[in-house]
Length: 329
Image (cartoon, rainbow, N blue to C red):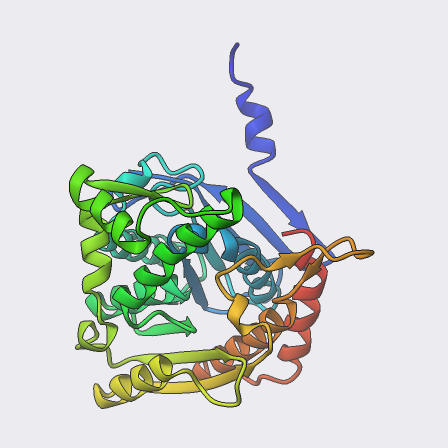
């Protein structure tokens, strides 16, 4: 059956006049892999700063997708072009999951920044990410000439993140079957060593990727970044998480202009987990809706300050945009 290219082209881009944005599908090659990206643009009065969202890893990437869509649209509605893309092994990326590595993720992020820099009207480009995606964004910024980065509760210790990721598989087994196979985390480590890979919540993790993630300590990986950084801690308590506090101190030690912000919310523990819950008598609730509004408003205000532009009313724009779009994401 022949492909109707005219129809595909017609659906490549859409405009939302109510929100004041357009979105366009792109098919770039990032990190030597063909993939799909979405460019969100304001319809009017675009800022000269474009932002690139780095995807996460495993189930965290899937769980954060709704938040990323909502916040990308809110940022774009406030005037900022935003690029988000499918990471290696996800969605319409041509590479398989087993080809993922930290090195490949950082290379893809750097290429995505170059893609954004080539867009009309973009004079500066910043990189951003949440959780594991925040770790990748920080590493990409440190290893390239990216001068602005936004990190929302970034992972700072790869070994701790990997332990939590492996435990999620064990919990999944218990929920599905009432028992776990073998001797817990050691069994999964043995699988990785013996066969060279393991399936964790449907994600094929190679031995090389496992070892690479386990070795990451962001506090030592970051060694040259001296640009502008916004680091947002998302916590259920009234203080920043220890990893964020240490990362902020490290960035300032390197000479970066680092702003640390705190978003306190009881749903903070769900960041990177399933964000939508179905309750009796309720169709569905987005437990991270309030978090999305807050981090987006903080990011917009920070970006406007960095561009030396007035920030009056931008938080209200962001909050309204997230509210309107979260259910559509």
